[in-house]
Each structure stands twice: as structure tokens, then as C-alpha cells.
Length: 176
Image 1 (cartoon, rainbow, N blue to C red):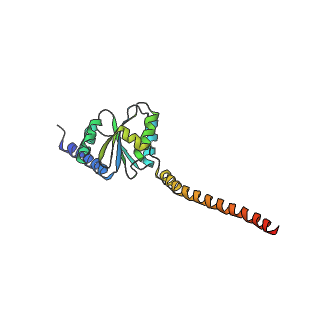
Image 2: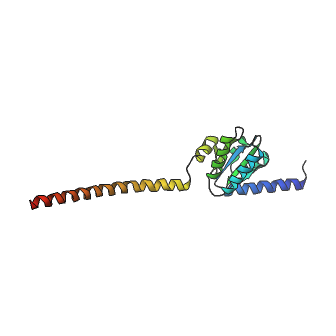
Image 3: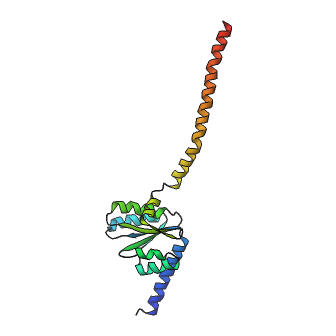
């Protein structure tokens, strides 16, 4: 039987993780087995730069924290060597970074995730990772808005050019 101080430490860890889960818009659970130290270091750096908290902790503690915030379904994915990546503000960031490493490393695998308080499967996480960045989406949107305006401008210019060619011909005919 663990001592009272150890139980209190574990409860504090679970409470801290539960707060992070509650405050985040999304997260991803991965099986990190087989990743080298070099790749793990690079991945953690990329996650930090993307504003993602990455943690390796006991599955039982992660499961309890998930239950506390209403993500009890996540427990089915918590077996083996798992880690959780928690988005701080950009819900797509953990999925994008972890998908990149899952494609590079054969044994590294995305298991599941959560999005807006709902547990989602591996396929949904991968789909989320494939979404273009906010900047790209804005650029595409603006391009689609500008396209009809360019078409109208070209059509109007063609009418002006056509009228401009007809006017000198009419003047020449009138002089003759």
C-alpha cells in the first residue's frame, strides 16, 4: 500500500493534468515506442515551438485525469508506452507535428485524440493534421473572393478596348 504522501503526489499530478486537459481545445495520444532519443528531442522541440505540452506519464494517472474532465473513453487507448500532447491554443498543432513523426518512424503511432471535449479516433486526428494552416486558408478565401472581381475587371477592360478601336475607324470613315 502506497504511503499517504505518495498518494497525495499522484493526486496532485492527476489534478494538474486534468486542468491542462480542461483548458486545452485539443490533444493527441501516441504510442512512442521505438523512437530514438535524437528523434524524441527534435519532436519535443517542434512541439514546444508549436505551443504544445507533451507529457509521458503512467497510463493510470492519465486515465484518471481524462475521467475527471469527461474524456473517459480515452482510457481504452492508454496501454503500452503512451504519451499525450496537449494543445495550448492551436487545436491542429499537436496533430500536425505528431503526424510528421508517425510518418517518419514506423513504430511511432497516433492512437487517438480529443477535440472540443470529445474523444476522436486516429483517422480524425490524421484528417485534422492535414488541414492547411490558418494563413493558407485565409489566402485561399481571399483569392476566391478576388477571382470574380478580376473577371469583371477584364470584361470591362475588353469592352473599353473594343470601343476604343471602333472610334478611330469611325472618325476615318467620317473624314473620307
